[in-house]
Image (tube, rainbow, N blue to C red; front, side):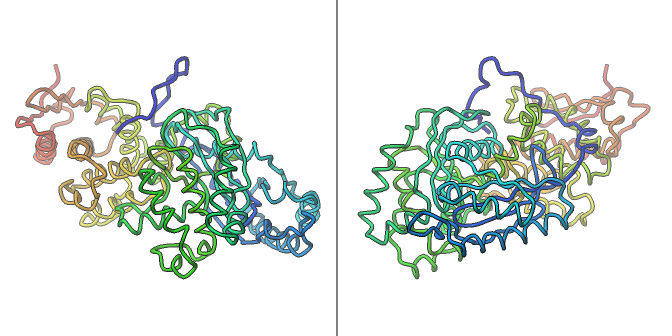
Amino acid sequence: MTVRSAEPAGEPTRRIEIDTARILGRDQAHYGVIDIGSNSIRLVVYDSLSRAPFPRFNEKSFSALGAGLDASGNLTDEAIRRAIHAIRRLDAIAKAMDVPRIDVIATEATRRAKNGTKLVEAIREATGMETRVLTGEEEATYTSMGVISGFFRPVGLVGDIGGGSLEVAEVVDDKVGERMTSMPLGALPVKALMEEGYGTAKDAIDEILRENIPPLLTNPVFYAVGGGWRALARVHIAMNAAPISVVHGYEVEAEELRKLARKIAKMDRAEVADLPDVPSRRVDTLPAAALVMSRVLKALKPESVVFSSYGLREGWLYAQLDEEEQYRDPLLECAQAIGLPGARVPAFSAALAKWTDDLFPGETDSDRRLRLSVCALTDLSWRDHDKVRAEESFLRLLQFPFIGISHAERAFLAVAIMARYGGKAETVTDRLGGLLSQSQLRRAEILGRALVLGHRFSASVPEILLQSRLRVEAGSVRLEVLDAESVPDSEAVQTRLRQLAKAMGVSDSEVVEAA
């Protein structure tokens, strides 16, 4: 696995460790965000206010506030009525779920409306909730924080297309850059432009981009946020039969995506509806979103596009965390959250992490976070029947909603845990579609076989495991036991050690007493 950027000078060393006591002892108070956009109003209730929050409830109402402006630029009474009806329902649900904190944020349509304060007051009167109307700069900032939250140290430009506007901002590792802009290039205004003709719309978009969009000076990556662009990703995934159907972290060469976007931008409604896996609610606006993507890629000329399911809401949540929590690794936090509470011995994952510290010499931070995440997930399928553990864990992890992870890294996790349950990497090579090289497949299998050995030798007891160590040398691998009399080995242990040696491509293996 590779890291996109080096550790910035002066930054503290990242703590990439399994912390069992913190994960099992933390407060799980729910947290809700209501996002009032130009096209929809959505409530997401998260399991906690944390670095890797899991959505417990997610509902969206297409209120079309952006289309509810009259000729004077005011929200109509009907538009406000629809919005309040949706928000009252979402508020009632959140209260029934006993959510102690609900934040309400509003974006382009509300701030653009001359009477946006009327909607804010109506929300207060109907629910008692206060609404924060974000400026264009704030919207770009929080969306960028969402990308920072959802990826491992992203570097590039973030673009978020909504119903009413397009925000573009720079992200550099864990920080939002100074360059950002908000433009009236959301799906609804662009759709209206396209009704005047494709060429007219294209020229108008290009002019707005020339006047506003910052150049891509950092990393040649464009992070795409927003439902319209996620729909574009879903179509591309389906058309290419990608091995992983998760949109978050899906990466496409920019020129390839631009060709698809140009094609979709010129389609009529029936042709769009026939596209594979296109969301039905995006059929009318997908050509507009595709046209904006095409023109943005032409203007920026990035090498690749990475799609993000994390955006404004997640960035708002991320901004509520203290600095220590923000600096935690998102993938490892997620892996611990799902792996440790259900493990037979939760503390064993940390012992495995220490025990495998010397397994891969020259390990980078990126590689370490993957190895520790695999250790955190080591007992994920212990309750399943032993005949299906390998296959079921592989399929589950391949599509699991992790954050801070690329599709190749998903594949690595899935193969490593499959190997931990006895599966062989060679059986899934074709199903991964080239996501992993042969050396990466081998590395994942080695890690999985090491975990099998650790579990078998120690019976998943941390104190027993840490009475031994793995010693890998040229042509051999040894399990050194500090006190062989107190913890004798067995044929089962010898078999698991030979399997590890085979995965490593060495011929000699033995259990010995450490000097």
